[in-house]
Each structure stands twice: as C-alpha cells, then as structure tokens.
Image (cartoon, rainbow, N blue to C red):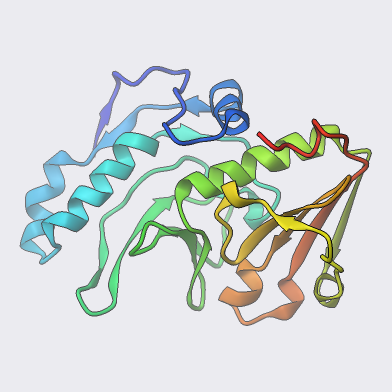
Length: 221
C-alpha cells in the first residue's frame, strides 16, 4: 500500500477527546506516514465488501492511521501503530477490520468491530471499549494516574472479582465494555477483562489500583 508522506510528524488529536487525552496524543504520540487505502477500494468491492464498510475503514485510517502511542499497561502494550486493514465479515455477522499490528507476538489481534468498538480477536471477538476514542482515553488515564499516584497495586485472577467497588463511579470517557475504569474518593481502578473473556480464562483477569490521588490526580477532565 502507498504511504501518505504528507502527514505531519506531530499528531493533532481528533475531535471529541478530553483535554487529558488530547494532551496525551499530542504530547506523547507520534504520527508516521499512513497507508493510502484508496487504491484497494475496487478490489474490496469486487470481493463483496459493501461500500459503506470500506468507507468506515477509510474514515478510521484518515482519523487514526499512522498514530503511534505509548504502550498500554495491558495486552502487551496494544497496537504498535493504529492502522486499518481490509474489512472481513458478512452481512449476517457484521464486519470487522484490523486496528493495527501488535508490538509483540500475541495470541490475539486488535480489531474494530461492527459498531466501531475497539477490541481483541481472541478465541472469540471481545470488545474492550465502545470506540477507539475510549481506548485512547484509557491510555491517557493510565499515563496520568501512573504519574500522580502514590501507590500502584496490580492484582490478578480471583482477587479482581473480590474488589469492592462500592462508592466508586465508572469513568464514562473510556467508554468501557470488557475493560472499565472506576473512580473513588482518592483512587482509580482499571479492570482488564478482555483476555479473560476472549480466551475464557478467568486467571487472565487483571486490575491496577492507583492510590493516594488528589483531585487533580483523579483526572476528571
């Protein structure tokens, strides 16, 4: 595929992100030349891919393609670079496309689902966040919380199910599905259920608890 060399090296955050996520993208991200998917439209149409699904892939590529962000705390860091791939699926089951290649060898890939969800293609499709924006918001919040927390506690397996979230509220901007963030009086908790659900492996449950946060550290913006 042809690379678009006109994209600036310093990324501009897409619309709709929080102030924290915009700073994260523009301050810590890098935009590399993204691939031009236009030459593949006719080929994909000939293979039976609906035009509306191709448009969805192209729109993702124009917004997110070529964006490299710091590693995520889970899933071995997430995609190395956000990059759309050829749509796969059917009218009956819906259509998916790749969200970018892994940083390391993984038993799952990163995909964008039929309704725009960001997730992993493991033993079964598991949406992590309701949108790519949610994934990026979660990355930004992890970076923010990790910087300001007095303590960071990592737990796994059954201990995650025993977490007491009474008095915590969900963090809406991460648009959590399998993965969720919770905000308490002085702490943030990230719960990663994607691999546990995608592989039917409860031992893969993970949670990170960021403690000792002040009002700024709780990241309400």
